[in-house]
Image (cartoon, rainbow, N blue to C red; front, side, top):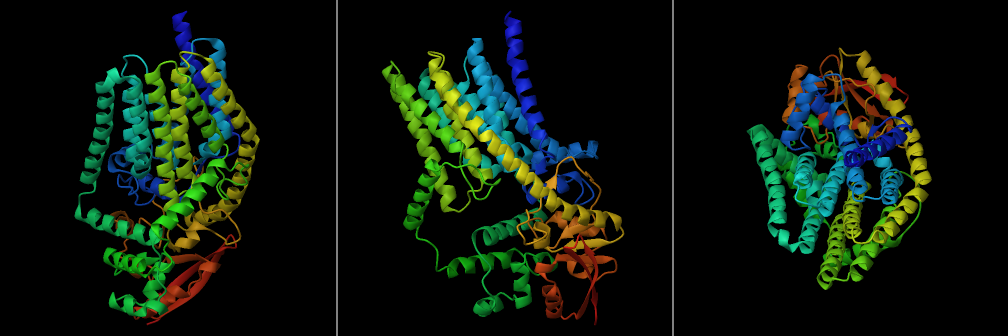
Amino acid sequence: MKKAHQGMNFIVPALLTLGVFVIVSCFGDFYFDLNDDVLMKDILSGAYTGTPAGHNIQMLYPISAFIALIYRVFKGLDVYGIFLCALQFLCVYIVAERAFSAFEDRISKVITALCVFLFMLGTIGSHFVFVQYTFTVGFMSATAAFLIMTHEGDGKRDHVLAVVLITLAYLIRSEMLLLTLPIVGVAIFARWLMQKDLFWKYLKLLVFIIAGIAVSMVLHKIGYSSSEWKEFNNLFDARTELYDFQYIPDYAENKEFFDSIGLSEAEQQLLVNYNYGIDDEINADTLWAVAEYASGQKTDETPFMENLKASTVSYLYRLRHITYQKSYEYPMTDAPWNIIALVLYLTAFVIYCLAPDRSKKLCGIFSVLLLFACRTTLWLYIIMRGRDPIRITHPLYLMEIFVLLGMILLESKNSKRYAYVPLVAVSLASLIFIPNQFGVIKDEMAERDVMRAHYDALYDYFAQNRDSFYFCDVYTSVKATDEGERTFSEKMFDRVDNRLANHDLMGGWASKSPLYYDKLSAYGFASMHDAILSDGVYVVTKESSGIEWLSDYYLDKGVNTELQKIDTVADVFYVYKVTSAN
């Protein structure tokens, strides 16, 4: 009987996870949500340089090297796509198994399984289809926190798995893991408060988490220890500062500054349109100089206290604002995430207020308040920095929801009614939003199919002309038209081609990296500047991007050029041949 019971604790969560996978699969293909994941996939698979590369720039080296190694064995598979999807559905299973096994009686198990199932579909739903590594990391961190909160007994499995999830999450997207780590810390602290006799156990857990992160960091630094990668990392940091937090000053109004750093108007235009890869003289020093100058020129920067006040107003509005999603990301809405979080906060607070033991009452109330204070600090931080897309905000919600749910499940051991109310409430909120979630996914899928029709045609054009090479204007690679079309993304598991691609961007976050020079070398080029003027090499832009900036750049370098449009692809992409007229 006991074996049968344990078997159900495995089988039901597995079937639940399979059910979520099957349902979301019915909406169409899985997508890499953003172009960042696509380029990372190309680097890892070998499509970028011709050989699977362990340095994919965005991830830490150990996990990148491991995925690249798998690509060497399974050359024709979308290994990176499988990796991200597998991690997400693994988290679904872990959460479902832990929640389902928290109860012994059948009714409680059914309610819990239904709650998890509806939550995954009605709340997380779209993230299973439009996959982004930042959200995946947040999901892993939240799952680790849930394991920590619900751990019971003397076994070490939960804590070992939590450490593995957190370390792996750090390797995949260190910035996101570090953003969520304070809430993991709250979970560990809350469990220690509830079981003070297990101080050394939770201290050991914290030490292992820190050790996992430290070892990962050391291995990453070793992997990027060459002078070439150190030089590029400096440029990467400068690029991030300039494009994510500063701006490109107008040339005419700041001519004296640009002259002082040796940057002409044509070269400044390369920074504006992000195509600075063509100019070998634009380096980390150039980008740092522009970023620092732009920072000093800001006259509209909001004072800290004023920014904090405005951000607090926005934060409080998002806490209480409830509406259906109109589209996948923008305009943003936090429902049903904020509804579920509010229900769980109130439930956890009431449960601990009613606790008969005074020590547990005080520790529980303090833990709930500490969690809310932590989430408030994190939210104000991202809002003040203007970095609050759903791939960041939804994982933050997920973190606190799982921690609160863990608190409630712990107390349900004393009285099941403590769990029934929040579980039913979460189920109802998720159920109500399922039609909206499915509608959002359907509409987003249709709009991405329109976008893919353009880029599939362009990729087919590249494939049909493999003896040629194509440099793409950066903003052309981001969006095919300016008429409300979705930005570039790519389907997973469809049209998989891991052969060396005969095209590259003229800028972007991988530009001027050792990988970039390896790609040029694979085609016999020393620089993009010279390659564009070579036979069989072409430039691809869209109409709104123009092409005059390219002739202006070469003229500034003393080269007269002739630009001939030789082809049009999908009615939106123009293919140009650039020849020297000197």
